[in-house]
Length: 154
Image 1 (cartoon, rainbow, N blue to C red):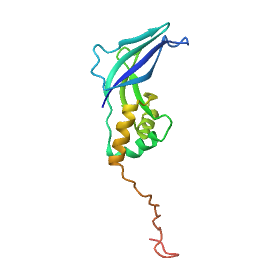
Image 2 (cartoon, rainbow, N blue to C red):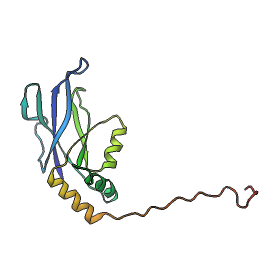
Image 3 (cartoon, helix red, strand yellow):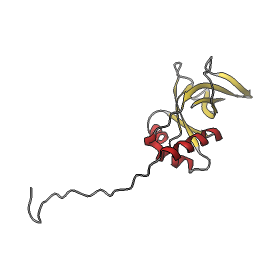
Image 4 (cartoon, rainbow, N blue to C red):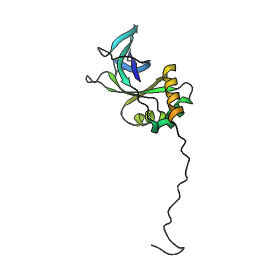
């Protein structure tokens, strides 16, 4: 599903950054944005821009992460952003509905923020999970014995 990423640019409140960038919402089914950064709304010191349109992919192997996300109130989308070519702005790089994948991106140097998941996306993810999720039973790992018999070494 194509998701338009809406990013807010706000005047910085510190001496180290002129602007702060953060995703605020997504537009389900958005088309390509031309030019990138099309202004949607603006006010005193802030601007909402359609920064990019990214594909959100769903994988059968990650249904547990989607289920975990859908159990939260409200479900979220993780938007991953990286510095743009000028180094000043942050550009959306990826979007995911998986809590596990979102957490994985947070460990690195990327900027990761969450936005509320729109109802259309909730329905899509829920249908995908219902269709593809398979519970994997927990198997306790058994330690390998270091010695074959009591008192004997290998």
